[in-house]
Image (cartoon, rainbow, N blue to C red; front, side, top):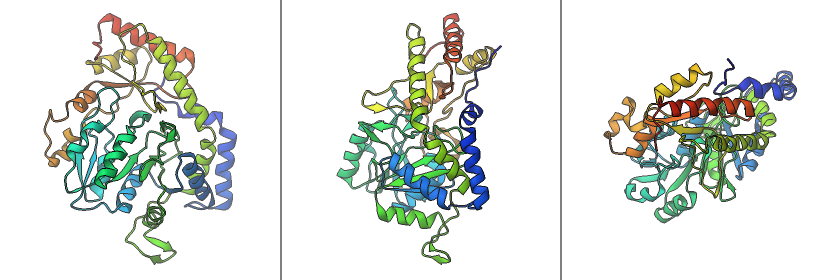
Length: 375
């Protein structure tokens, strides 16, 4: 039986192996292991790619979110509005800054924060909005920016899953006041280790983040701020420079694979992802849903199809964040999504044959009654 892995990082590496190996050897030869010329060039290239003036490489996406908060002046006593349906890092970064996360439920169609509900959550303590471009689809940035402008709020885009995604022709990363990206290995643009970046069009934010990531120093041993050790490694910068050249090609392959899945599932009762017409969805995740998720996962695994969950528990229901005071039922769409969501294999290297195997297995399970599809 052929196994379709949920992700296949080795296949991608083999497709660019000579370039990656040369980039790594170059770092070894030059011994620029922390920040350095390769990171500086990657910062310029990725900022330009994302429609921003400045890019600051950091050690991971969580640090990117954290430093964006601090650069924006968010701290104790402040509130940041975001979604309860996201990876925990989105909310952890708010907590790191000393601020309080305030949740707004999602739109059940696309799993993104329901922008129409944001304004009702604003209080005198609200300092920022953190929209999460979940699964690679941008949030409704026109409405979010309009609300932020009306109330004098900062907008920090969580673009950790949305490299190259576009909202009405504009790349995410250059729409809000700041944006955070992750280069975790499994991301659409992934390092061979950890990595992240903050992008912005604000020169003062950029200057602050460059200091905060490097012990608060503006130059060596001149510590202007109380900072952190959150620098991007030279090796990762070099690897990411190679991979960035292929990102649009890989993204279009993902989009083609998503379209192929949609066609394969067209005459079935399988739920396919909703994509807004005015966005470029980059399909970090290809998501479906079922009310009997574990049964589905077990059945698919038996047929050689690996799956994932993104994410099984809404943040307000996690023990770590019960001190926020939210109760079960306050965000019903997020809670239902967390109970039903399931991710199918999605990456550029998926072949039509692999997708046909996945689709046939899903459709067979759905028809057999082993899985009740959620609508």
